Image (cartoon, rainbow, N blue to C red; front, side, top):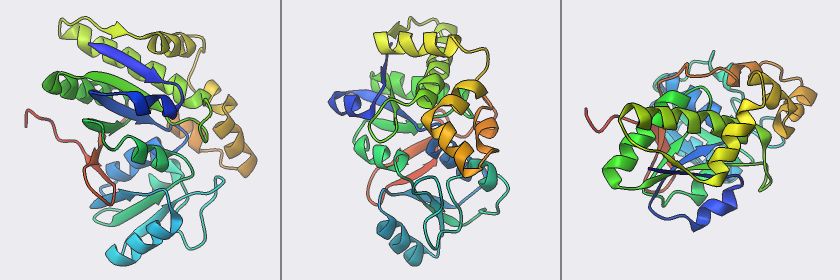
Length: 249
């Protein structure tokens, strides 16, 4: 099974027959996973603030997201997964709009399947991606959301962990993973750090969070394999993500 990585999201626009995993480690992917962990009834994702506010009015929903790392005017939450992990969003509609991650999800919405991955759900995301790729006779592609089109260290390191998990899943099933060069590169990048918190802190996003005084999100997002929630993009508009239910169920 072929595994590829787009180190910047523009590369993924040329992919075909690819089960995609979008990673915006700090912080949209981690926030999406956490919101679904908290039991929201529906999660919409949108790039535009006015579209987000319109959906919130229509569905009596909660608004979450950021511009420049901080919550826009009138939003209930910013894009902090650590803060949302303590919030009561059960059975509520949530609308998430961020500077980068929600936009990239829109770019790959036409893939055969689009998952949202992060360190929190790395193993579960790998298992689902392999399951879907086998069922669709497709390859797996990890899309690093980057920072406004530029390489992002936090996304690439998280991609390295997820590639490792995918390789483990395929090997456990007796298969043979075929890693493209970018996939090999992110595994080597991840291996160059003794821990995961350090590269997240050193990334552009991590340094921004430090300047904003948001110190709890990096250690929260650096946790690995603590969630079994795998968000999957639901076809149609407006864009929504929901918790994946196994094909075997």
